[in-house]
Structures are given as C-alpha cells and as structure tokens.
Amino acid sequence: MTEPSHKDPQAPKATVSRRAFIQTTGAAALSATMIGCSTGTSTHAPSLDPNAIPTDAMTMRTNPNTGDRVSLLGFGCMRFPTVDHTSARENANAPLDQALINDMVDFALDHGVNYFDTSPAYCQGRSEGAIGEALSRHPREKYFIATKLSNFAKETWPREASLAMYEKSRQLLRVDTIDYMLLHAIGMGADDGLSAMDVFHKRYIENGILDTLVEEKKAGRIRNLGFSYHGDIAVFDELLKRHDNGQNHWDFVQIQLNYVDWKHAKEINERNTNAEYLYNELEKRGIPAIIMEPLLGGRLASLNFKSIEQLKTLDPDASIASWAFRYAGSPANVLTVLSGMTFPEHLYENIRTYSPLKPITDAERRALEQVAQTILNYQLIQCNTCQYCMPCPYGLDIPAIFSHFNKCLNEDHFAADIRDPNYAQSRRAFLVGYDRAVPKLRQAVHCIACNKCVHHCPQGLDIPALMQRVDEYVEFLKQNPT
Image 1 (cartoon, one colour):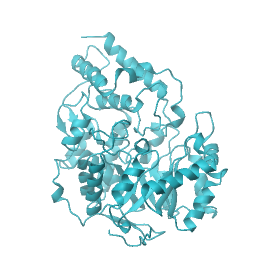
Image 2 (cartoon, rainbow, N blue to C red):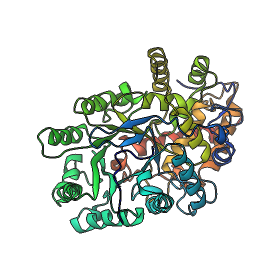
Image 3 (cartoon, rainbow, N blue to C red):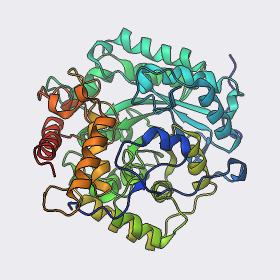
Image 4 (tube, helix red, strand yellow):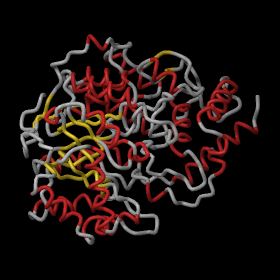
C-alpha cells in the first residue's frame, strides 16, 4: 500500500474516614471500578458533553527530526475496553469491544488526536490487531502509529523470533511503514540474574536486531526509531552515548514523567531515576520526549483527602487527573503524553485538558510539589499496574491486590489500631472490597515468594515482601473483629 508523507497531517497512616471519593470520570467507568471502598463524591470534573469539546483546539508539537505535527495527547492502547465493560489489561478472557474502540478512535481523530501507541504485549497480544482495524478505516496520513519490539521472553531473543515479531506487528497494524518504532522497556533485567545491560545486548545487539531496525529505517519502513526506558540508568546512559558518537541516532525516547517522579523517583525506589535527569539529558541533545505514566499508574487520579482538598482549593472545577496531564505536557521538549483510555469519558476529559494546553504556572508547580511530598509520606505501594509481573505462576492478581490496598489507604479505609473510632467501618470496607476486587484464590495469602515477578517489575518493587505486608494486614483485620 502507498503511504503518504506525514510532514503536515491533519492535524502517613490514615485512620479517619471523613468522606469517600470515587475516582472515575463517568458512569461507564464508575460501574467498572466500584470495589467496596468508594461510596461518595467524584474527584473528576462533571460529566462532559462530547459535543461541547472543540474539534480544532488540540495542542500540537513538532518533531524536529521529521517535521511531524503530533498531538500533545497520545492515545495509549494498553487498556482497551472489553465487552463486559472492563479493561483488557486486567481481563484476559473477555473479548475486546471493537465497536467501542472504533468509536473512540473516530472521536480522537475528529478532535485532533493523531498519535496511537501500542505493543505486541498489550491487551494480552490483542492491542495491535484492534488498533490496526480501527485505524485502517481512515486515511493513512491522518495518524501516526507507534509500536514496540517487545521481545522480553528469552524465546524471542533469537534473531528469527524477533524479526517475526516485527513483521507480525506490521501485518496486524495493516501498514507498510511504522511511524514510531521503539526498543521496548530498555533497562530491565531478567529473572535468572542477568543484568539490564546484558539483557539489552542479548535482545538487540548480539542478534543484530538493532542494526536491522536501522536498515529498516533507511529503507523507509520505519520513520522514527527510539526506545522506552525502564530501570537501570546505566543502560539509558549507554544508549545516549551511542547517539552522541553517531553509532545510533534516536529520533525520540519514551520516559516516565509526572510531578512525583520529576524529583522523587529515587525516593520511591532507589533503582528508579528522577524524570528531571531523564528529560534534561534528552532536551540537551534535541531528542523529543514521549511521556508515559503521567498518572503514575492511576495514583495521581486517586489522591488522599489532603491532596484533593489542596488542589480543589486552587481550582474547584479541575479534575484531579487534569493536574497531572497539564504537568506532563508543559515541558517544551515533550512531543506527546500517552494516556491509556478505557472508556470514552477518559478520552473526553483528556482531550479537553489539551485543547488547548494551559501550561502549569510556577505557583501551581509549587503546589504539586507539596502534593508529591504528601504522597511520599503516605506509604502507598508504588505499583504502576503495568502488568509486567503477570501472569503470576501461582495465579495471584498482583496489580489488583496492590491497587485495592492503595485505594483503601487513600480513602482513609485503613486502621491498624482497634481503638480507632472508625476501625469497624474501615475493617469492613477493606475486607469486603478485597474479596470483590480480588478472588480469594488470587489473594496475597497464596504468595510463596518464588521471586519470578521481581525481575520483571520496572519499579524494582520487592513484590513478595509487599505481598506479605498486605496479607499481614488482612490477617490482622480478620483476627480482630469488632
């Protein structure tokens, strides 16, 4: 098929439950996320009328390497909806709701969103085919497609297997040319003790795959070549050295950036790298940054009471999530900010936030730093629900366990002292919600600390130790009825 140029396309411990906040953006999302702790007021903006969202106000950024005019909002294809109104990232069994995906893609394109980010690993392998079907209904010059060589598993490290994955991506996406091609999750180690640098060399250097991708770019079958970074900073620095000495040219790099990780990623986990460093290293080389995890795995849309009240004082009409998106989109060298949007309400709100972007002011930046400090003191489990730890060989739903723990902590449904006047209410909310959110056979009590998950976690979490923490709290609640 012929693919035109894209130079100018269409464009602290919580003990008192004062009130509960439902962290959703609309009725569809609400029905999918109610798990037992939430019973009150939404922290998001009021339900949006899609007809009131402008079609011609999306903030656009220019890729200096290619002249691509890219929407500041990027459509992440990791959390597509299923027919049972859940996210395919969490539900491997339910079929994708292709009709709804098509409708959301149509709406996104009609409102200026033109960057779509997927991977062979997303939605249990179903994402590329779904977005390929949705986008193929539109003129090729209307959109940019980004995908990744997600050769994490050792059986995909050989050259033939990696090449087969690359070719399958092009087939599923129904394109001759991939606009933005990424080496996926650079900086992660392996469960047999291989270092992140060793894994990088085995995935991309020793098998000649990086050289092949460079040749594919020269042949025009890849337009922009970059990588997404998770984990070991030595690998990030090594790839930038390859850029500096002309060994490889990176047209873009995908990094995790939000108002907590900007200065505090290493405080959350010592193996993480502050986004300020990552962004500045890219900016001084003129390499555009693509942003992932603007909501820190959803945690910046589900804040604790103190932080919510602080932000509502600044702007009572702004959703909690919009603060994070504005922060992530404000740096000038950011090309696009990815959001994994399951329901139309998510899409509507994010488009509104960037149509156009209202950059974060210095005063707002200081307020968000105060929120970040509160989050750091709140003892949340720093899980981004990326699902890289899944599937657990013993059937645990690791992200759901951590999400429920964090949700109840944020909503003050957490009391470790039976003398707490709200102990009975908090105990019931936690235990009832836990059984609703996570089937009993998939709960933390069944963790045997096999450590298979640890080396796959981009945040470097000691997952077995955290599972023990959750299970000990659950047992405390069970052994101490009111």
